[in-house]
Length: 159
Ligand SMILES: [Fe+2]
Ligand SMILES: [Fe+2]
Image (cartoon, rainbow, N blue to C red; front, side):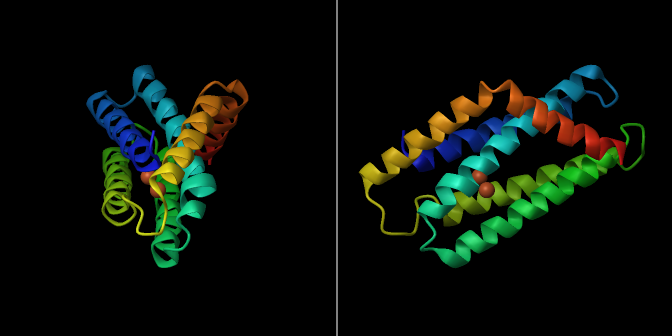
């Protein structure tokens, strides 16, 4: 699969997980489960972009620098949300702020980096996409990865 298609499809996975979380009442175990799932998928997404996609399009250096800065914003807002107790009155607001930040970043990537504004052939895009899919499959099957991401989330929640 071509790299840009991999990203668009995975953005939609993230967006639908966000919708599922929004639709699940706060303070339920199910919401917590969906949030944990989002943490894992978001971590996978940032890894395939930071390690594979962004380096491959690094000739578009300004856009890639913006994308890296936005990943930090997404992670910072995620940390703020995770540190907010579900019973706190700011909880839904922090969640919505996270969704807005993530969605704005994904939309910007889909506008500026897809298709990549660099000299890259169709077969290179296909190779890159296949490597991204392999990485996603490997991370999704890794219980060590899942545990690491959960532990990070749990540590933030305790702060
Ligand atoms: Fe990104
Ligand atoms: Fe993305």
